[in-house]
Amino acid sequence: MQCRIDWERRYQLMRSHSAAHVLAGVFCNETKATITGGNLDLEKCRFDFSLEEFSRELIEELFKKANETIEKDLPIHVTFKPKKEALEDKSLFKLEAKEYIEHLPEEVRIVDIENFDKQADGGTHIKSLKEIGKLTLGKISNKGKNNRRVYFSLG
Ligand SMILES: [Zn+2]
Image (cartoon, rainbow, N blue to C red):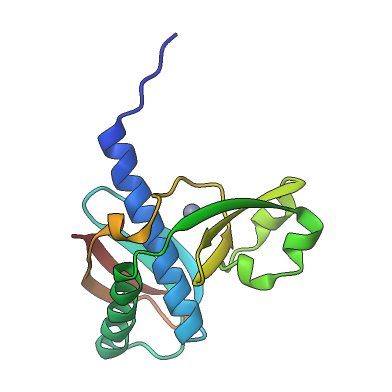
């Protein structure tokens, strides 16, 4: 059997997934948000988090910071760490649901946006942030204190 990667689709998802890293980094650095979920699609992406304060102004400010970070074109590196060592660094695990921690492999893959954010992660990413393009904030919706939702697209 032969498989072929739909490269255009894969590349779009690499970009939007990497964008979600930038948002997670900015939201967690600038506020006390924890990330509760998300959904990445080709056209429109969704990003869910838990945060006390929720206003369009705040989210716009965070997106502005995210775009400034992207403009810096920071490189993305992939490294590995022994599980025991990785678990000592809580900032590597930004998702609120922690079930996946039980299933970590002995060598944990770390996705490192240089001098910005590191996360334990198994996904596919672009090489440096400029490939993402500009993030455009779409609708925001309030699903309750523990579930704020924003939509965004990539420029
Ligand atoms: Zn990732």
